[in-house]
Amino acid sequence: MSRSDTPQRIRGTQDLFGEAARRHHAVVSAFDRVRGLYGFQRVEIPIFEATAVFARSIGETTDVVSKEMYTFEDRGGDSLTLRPEFTAGLSRAYLTEGWQQFVPLKLATHGPVFRYERPQKGRYRQFHQIDAEIIGAAEPQADVELLVMADQLLRELGIADGVTLQLNTLGDAETRDAWRAALVAHFEAHRGELSEDSLVRLDKNPLRILDSKDPRDRPIADAAPGIDAHMSSEAGAFFEAVTKGLDAAGVAWTRNARLVRGLDYYRHTAFEFVTDRLGAQGTVLAGGRYDGLIESLGGPATPAVGWAAGIERLGMLIDEPAKPTIDVAVVPMGAAAEAAAGGVIATLRRAGVACDMAYKGNMKKRMQKADAAGARFAVILGEDELARGEASVKRLATGEQAAVPLDRIAAWIGVETAA
Image 1 (cartoon, rainbow, N blue to C red):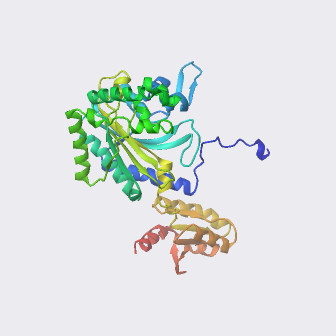
Image 2: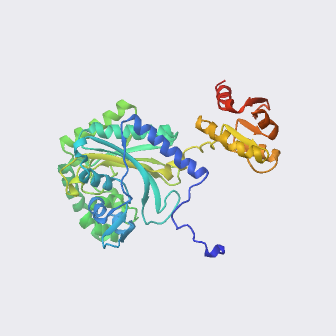
Image 3: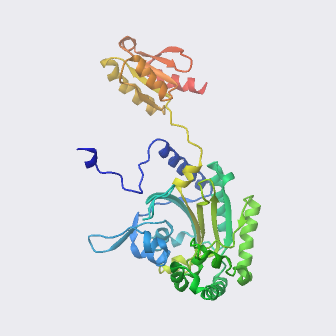
């Protein structure tokens, strides 16, 4: 088969290997450590759901639903969609799996998500996210906990200094309705100057005009009324509790009164952690409170708050992780030694010693391979050593060598490593 006949990787997907795989693993490992510190349970949910789960929860008018979802009909005629994000699927599971009995629920997950968008730096059609949610907690302390957790994750990854937390409030239902009415009146007065996309949003989802990147919309959006003039006392108190909680935890934040989540089920806290280290200012972690989402899926009114972050984007910001190394390279010379080496290496691994076998080339090449793998010791097996029931164990950093009985190698390595 010629190269032209070989199936190629689909555009917008990745094959993770080497450094890319190490960066991915470093982000996931840090996330697992931090979510454990905060008592978040790890959960797994399906990669695909009924299309209605995303259409009803994310919203028909969003770009994700209208332009970016991978939707297909299965053999039974059902419309299914590869998940473009985690929150909708977690909310569906909360309703269908009886998780209501465990509220408040602190959930964490990670894995691939799918969006049909133009691939660019740090953005793919199959990419990966980490996700954390608290379901069933209406208190502002839940928002604070998630934000502090996100801040600690960025610190663990060593990238907090280059990232800024932008924070806003979308108020309660009373606040949002009053603000929405003021926005509609403002945008209606400028209807003839808005872009085509914003005209559609004006009828269905006017808050999203505030987020428009179209240069025709920016002056109008920038002059739009802010939410603070319409804030109820209850919504103001909620936001103050969140900001005081962040201050008490030592988490720096800045107010961005133009930061919105355009869907009707969003309430109160909205936030983004942003950086300019990826070129243009980019979001690396974002979320908010979505008290109306589970209700939109047919469940009871249920408060919830959460965030998600792209693993690829976080992986681009961290320092390059060290290459994995091994403790021992087993170097057999001769057919009899190669047969015996299998037993030696199995015993070492069962004893918790990371090791590999250098079984190709002459002695010099095998020792070079052991050194390149970062091994601290080489266990050399030849016919003479086997006849004596021992191996020659060499400390590669110094060249020191010792004869060690085959059944004592693991213990000897353990003592030397601890010393």
